[in-house]
Image (cartoon, rainbow, N blue to C red; front, side, top):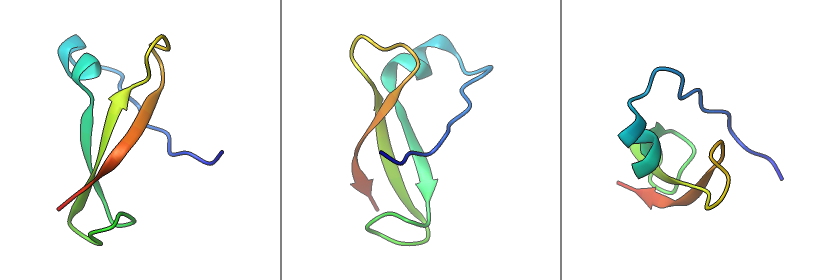
Length: 54
């Protein structure tokens, strides 16, 4: 499985728990769109893609 690396070093703990909306030129909405990621259950170091948002 291919994936993107996201360095969360220095992020506040709550942001790591809540997930992240990241700017992405490769998502369904093209440049300016965002990809929504949530922490993987039981794996404190992995985030899983949930979908794309405008």
